[in-house]
Image (tube, rainbow, N blue to C red):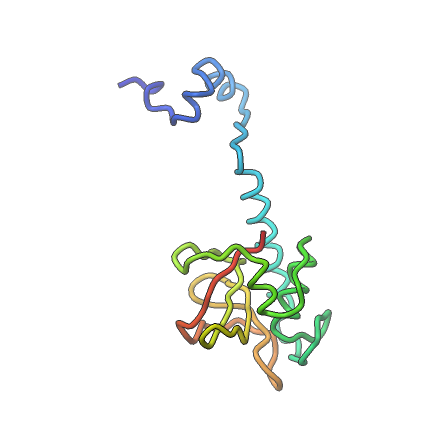
Length: 157
């Protein structure tokens, strides 16, 4: 089998000459949907970095930053700084995300804590089973291991 026969189907559909020309000039192929996926990943990474930069900020119920936060206030603030608008409460935020499975979660996705069908907390997934969040009164924004399996995941669109 020649190298050209192993070209991925997208490249093959683009045509051998196009693929070779593209490779020769160091160009890139535009794949439908890939730009929006990259933009979403970039937004999620920015939001995650904003949340991490607020490490140590005090929890205050109803606060949306820039120096004090409640849980959904931190996610709202972080995504706003990354260019996305979220509603105010954790439950409203859950309803505005694309719901994803735990196996498909990525850093920057939102983690919603629930009891039955009621959402009571939200944080931003940081990877390795940890979230950035504003936990509760008397606490501060911090990185913490997810402590329960009663969570749902959402990706900001």
